[in-house]
Length: 355
Image (cartoon, rainbow, N blue to C red; front, side, top):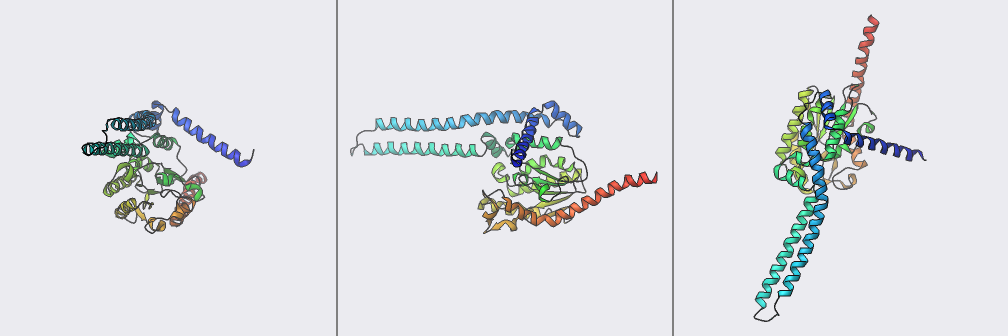
């Protein structure tokens, strides 16, 4: 077997092992893990309850919505057939009655088509969970098993060996191998979660602060408009909460507030531009520093097609542009990490020599 194939199988095996270990976690194991990390016990119960309910609803939606669409089509044909058999012959006297039947039939058809499109759109955006989150602005309604599983993994992973550099965000952050990008595997942590929102990031901000990171590179909010229907002010309020919660646990951490990237959608780009303008106002130049990434990705007021495959997520070229914008900052932080580690190791050696 070729070496690349062997590496691929090993990588898939490790991913399967992680997934199996996540599924095998019971509520007791979750509580014990959180207790050992100093977390409160209560959040575990609603998390697991929502995990189970979410899976059940997802299974129901997957089978019920296509069946519902099929029933709509059959009902449409049935109504059209019944109306067709009742239409009188076309005469001057019956023309008005026939026109009314035709208008009614057309109305029924258009209403069923509109309902079918609405069902398709809702299903594509997450089904009942999306609808609940949209109507109630409830971030927990849109929290899926992947979010919970990845956050569990973060909580259970050992931390040590210095103050890390943390990248925090949604799938745009999660999709990059930041430690390999900067050639420093051990002290750069990727805390991106696909599908995360600013409200979801605020829920896990204290766990990021508990790492006592040297710096946090934060970009969040791309999913807020679609999943939560947030106004710019609501997303910025969540940004403020994230910053405060991280600094509550780790006051010395520097947070690099990175601007939300543009997409291929004009409505979102207008919305995100307003968010970025307000987020820049949260920066004080010391503990919170604003980093403008947006301008490097713009082409005709939209995301440059050269840097994306779907109009939202970045490709390899896009991540290299991102790296170029922050490389000087990250390299300086890596040097500071190395200096801190040397000083920490020098203290025990000096004490031993003194003895």
